[in-house]
Amino acid sequence: MKTLFCFTALAGILGLVILDCGAPMDPVGGLHSNGGSNSITRAGKPATGCRTIQDGGLMDSAGNPLTLGFDQFGYNYQAHEFNGTYDSVDRVLDGKYWGQTGDYVDDRLRMKWSDDWLSNKDCTGDGKLDRDGASGISKGWLTNQVEGDYVDASGNLQHYTYFVKIVWVGLGGSLWGQYEVIQEVNNDPAGGYHGLQFKAAAPGFGLNDHWTQQ
Image (cartoon, rainbow, N blue to C red):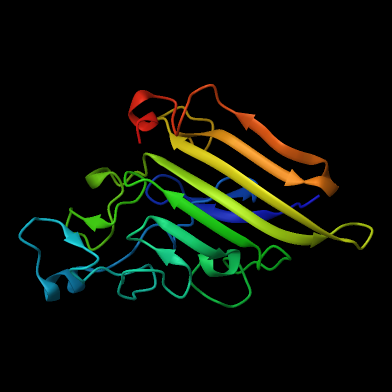
């Protein structure tokens, strides 16, 4: 059975929390770009009032300019997608995940998110990609898809896949205080997991009509 512990943070809502890697991830250094006012001043604000990645002047969490397409770490902010590894989530290719080591570091991780979770525009003028406009809170939905290998207690190499959907539901959610897991799929035969583990009664990507329509 694959047992992992990871550090993850939800920017603008929570401090650092520790979650099992089976829980959905929103890495603060990944899905939330971090730029300064200087970059906005140099480029000038577009006439539309919103800056896009194509316009230039937006930065990632390490201070690098955001560009179209996938970057070297696996982030494609324009397409609302990450396709990389746990190692590359923190935007430092050092064989670690936020400074932590483990056999999961090279496991494949793919994330997709809605525009309300993290937009591909800056309409607030702070040099960052917006999370639900000025609220700074990730709403909408996020999915995680993980695939990797591990060595079991008998020394045998095992393979696993994991998938989860989460949605914003407002205050009172059981995950991070404002979110809910609505579907979880775990395929880890050696660990005794075979397929769908949980699915909420709500259809689509949400527990209310607004997110279900996206």
